[in-house]
Image: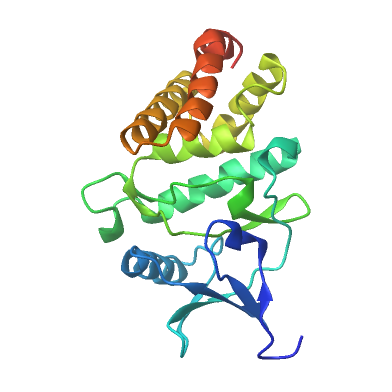
Length: 230
């Protein structure tokens, strides 16, 4: 690939202006950039290899990150991960959490959390998750929220697949992580959907609010069955 040629990347659907140049990715810096940069440098220092490397800032004020070769899935509704992928993702999330637990980046919280883990922010090589990307929402947080958010996204929890299958995938990811309370994960998914609905309500976004209301209605109807089967 010729150095200097900018190729737009699909991740730019959420962050406009993300491009690849050679073996690097250039991204506009967001308001959370100081924390993200500190976190990425820390992960490199402690040997966690499941995140891009930060090389600095280019002449246009964009972050310069290592390009991670592999496959990223942006269509959540169409994505059906293999058991091997879910197992290895669960283990990688655990390694990430262990790397940040007790660090200065966790501050007074439990860990440094990614807060947006899912197929759309994970690079795969075959069944192996190579790296988590798009760290813009990273912040001190909890294992419960970060893992529940990942389980919701990876296991495609909600309308669209049999409840028993979803419960099995939830259990699979929890076991791979080493989390022994899948009921808490299901409760956290339910609670987070309600928080999202309230946020959209306060912001005056009725269409988004209604989408989350549909998700909540599904959870209201099926959460107990998920727990019984997980």
